[in-house]
Length: 382
Image (tube, rainbow, N blue to C red):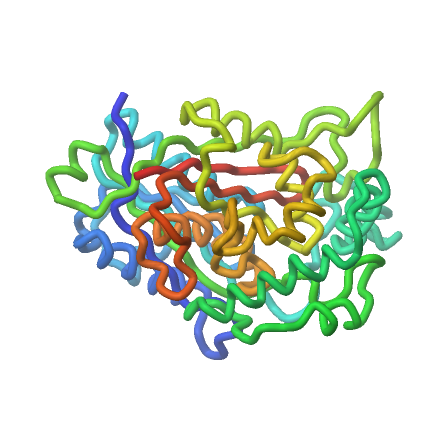
């Protein structure tokens, strides 16, 4: 089974871009990834990609070139980008291709997401009762966690302030102005305890990754980063998830993020304590806090001390969301997972400029989480 290397990664700008379609952002990201790899579109032998609401990825060939390659659409919620990457990796490992591409993109309208309950296997009455509003789920989950684990509201504001600081150092980010903890904490309450500036917003952007067999990467003399593992998981019994916020069974609710992270670490043959830089889903500030523990980086409740010490800052023991995460970049659903991979590739190559993690980072981790209880994780190394 062939090893897999990332030989190119590219982004469009993230944030509101009037007059630019989601498809155009996807094409921008693909060309950026190909340029990064020193390749052109006809070099790609197979492609996978998707978006939540901006069209079919396979139709991008009309803009990229009609080379006739297999191009498969992937739609898997917040794990769309990660799932496309799994498909690309499997194509390389199986020997079906030597060079493959994964792309994710979206352009969401202003305002909250508007999911339909019937699309998620739920009765129409669930939506009529207002339970499809995702901000409620995130607030319920973090409020319970804060009570159980001694996490303060001040820590929520610290996480969001870090995101805006990091975003100010990222030329592709949507939110590029730092924001104080006081401003964040005193902004309009959305769902207690989460205020307006503790949430990300549905956004716009595209991200693409080119992968190749390690032999091909050597032949091309590529600036490659090893893709040590990629794993996706769906929720198990007893989980407390978006659109199913109930505790079933006995004991602590299970976590799909824990299962995906555990699988990724096991396949890579490394542990969370070895990671030098991480990207964790931060749909809101509380999510980053909980995912630190769910992905195995610390114990429940230790986040309060970690964040107070600055451990998750760019210069800390475990830099998290160095590009500003979803809070600063917004959440174009199809693109988020591959944006995370792009950032870790940039960090491991030591090309992140003002937001570069100090020292010589060797291992990186990415994690996405979304409805209705799905997670995708990667481990990358140099």
